[in-house]
Length: 265
Image (cartoon, rainbow, N blue to C red; front, top):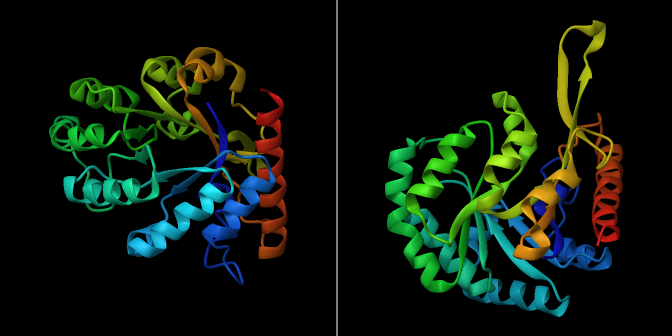
């Protein structure tokens, strides 16, 4: 098991709100500086436009830092997942995260199961595991029905218990239900706060250790050390009204999260 960072730990600093968005090479360099051993390139569409030479250069940069790469995308259409498998093989990636839905495709559990039965054997043959993330658009029961229906050691769950709160699923229940199938963990903390005038709540990210994520229970239940499941830092940092302050906090949260995880070894 290794600890690492995701492009979601740099959400604002690689966005179009940044005066100069960070590059993957810069994020890899910082991951190494902070002691991370894995970097997950997640929901980063430009990677689809990389030619073989660019992918080879990225792989060499990561290898030079001693960093393992992971990928992340969305959707279960076979042609799309085949494209990501090709990228994964070129980068030496063995874990690809996906989600069932996209903007233009929301398969039923039965349809998703059928599509993944068609796709997962190629992943298995390449030694690549596909992980489906827990999130509010799909109930945990439905997600697990797909994973169990495909029934392959190369298809599992990417556990991010905070995502399912919007579906009124308790994080602890999501952890307990998915634990046997978890192949990757996204680590981000979250909390509720009262809105102005005490009219409703805001559910947003917070500094790791200050919110509702029971990280100890998650680790005790999943057993990532014993099973070789990587833990990847992400954030839900709200925009702070300006780029400079948002970027400063994002950097602070990233450094705090990876340092906290490394100290827990």
